[in-house]
Image (tube, rainbow, N blue to C red):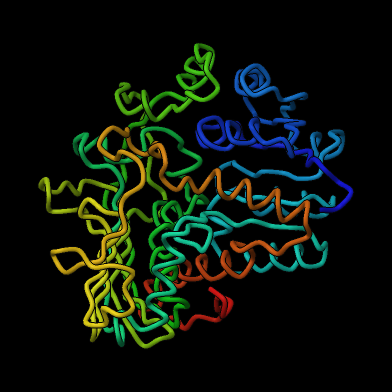
Length: 409
């Protein structure tokens, strides 16, 4: 470890992911000081001071960068702010953790990457779900590399978000700037978990053909001030998940969907496999037991399926590669935590919580001068898989990827 023993962190964006996930983790870490928080709404910064022990609060991000004694910044704001906020932090020599998406164009994503490299700061690009930070995903990737599926032929994946609350409730219940405005990138860029899941198993993507569209333009969301009212009544910093209540609140504020709400992509991977991926969040309910379109991968020697009551399961003729085989012939990786008792999308106890693991990994990389696993190459590649879908849909042509993941992933 370097002489530095504690990282002074500033947070911009005191919204749901900050108060439900990142801040509860940071406040428990001995190597972190929550030095400053910043948001446009004072009720939110005040809540972060009261609940999580933040030492200073700001209503202007650039003022926080100038005045606060911080080493690093978590950027947890709406997507339209990610590029300018990141570039401003990096220019000041601050390490960054950037919530998804990295950017909505490759030009802007490369601007971030170039600035980070020039400043020699540590950058985590979320999401780290499906990355090597998750030991279960790391094991799956290793088995696939060893040939447990043989030659991978094809895969399928659908990612639609919550659906059990009815047609009007399957869309995001809040956050016009985060999910509905044009510069948010829409649900394609809100759900990079899907391409992350694919590359987490199969490695780099080579090309994409896609059709994207906006099918439903008129929506209603919960009034913005309801979140502030919620925070005022929270007393337990480890139980500040707005998702637990907002799904049942009346949606009274009309908003327009200005970006893509559905994307249908055909990805060809560097290993030669290909598969279909649907990302959308309108109304896609499924019958109990049928599943909601989790990743399924099919090879010449075996199949890999996520879900079905497990984290993932593999059946293979290469039983010598499997750690164990159940009576049904499958190797099952159990789902950590009790999924049945969890409210969407609150991480279940014992399950891999990417917000927490990213935070810990980020601080470790800063203190010990390590390169992040979910760093620039990870962020650039997943961003390009989404950007490539838009470009393919726009041009009607196959989009050839220009980025690759490191060979170690």
